[in-house]
Image (cartoon, rainbow, N blue to C red; front, side, top):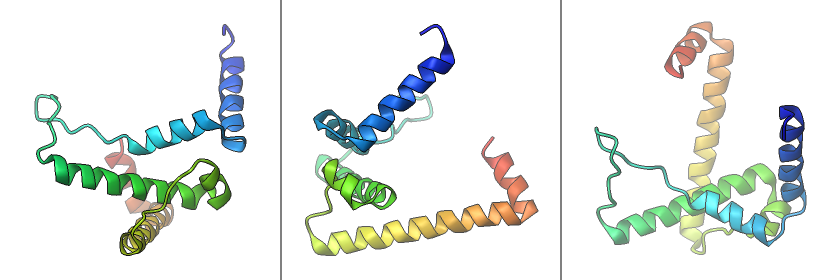
Length: 130
């Protein structure tokens, strides 16, 4: 597109269509994004391989379920079900992830309120995130 505004509008419309009317590609995209792990790099910027395949696989699996739960809490159960976002199959782990999710959201909310209403912390947060 030659017009950046029209291009942005078309991208936004495409995203909205996928969100409101999820299809099989929407499910694949959602699962792919939830499975992405952050790259771990050394001091030289080279990727660090995972050390223990068994533990790392289990840990990545837990992160997937945590992210799926966070997504479910943000978008609601009907849309999460349409995107086939799973809950952890084991109830104790599901409860643990729900508690971790709640603590994360509470800390995020407290941080947001603190930087909004305490000027000193707001300045520090802006400096930290630059």
